[in-house]
Length: 117
Image (cartoon, rainbow, N blue to C red):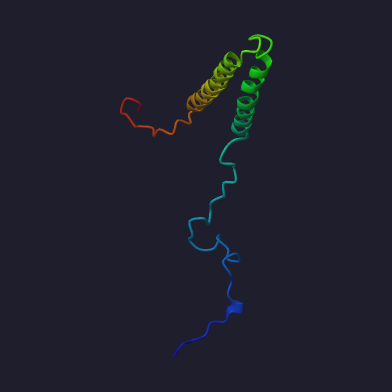
């Protein structure tokens, strides 16, 4: 014969306490740190804005002043400036990655050598 559960007396998943019992999360604090640091987001936004403003601004600034109406040369300069912004972003990203490795966050497991003992 089947038995019937009394649902009003049972705890829902949200009401259950993880600190009771042998659950893996019983003694751990949750990590609420953002996945990406704010400085990385600000750098990305700054380079995104520069990728829009620098080439267009260099085109319109030089098409009549420096190149006297020759839009081919002004367009070529705008393409060069877009590449310069992209290379600048790569250099900044690589420098930031190297600074993380110098601080000890390389992610490589430390080997236990007999010479180190």
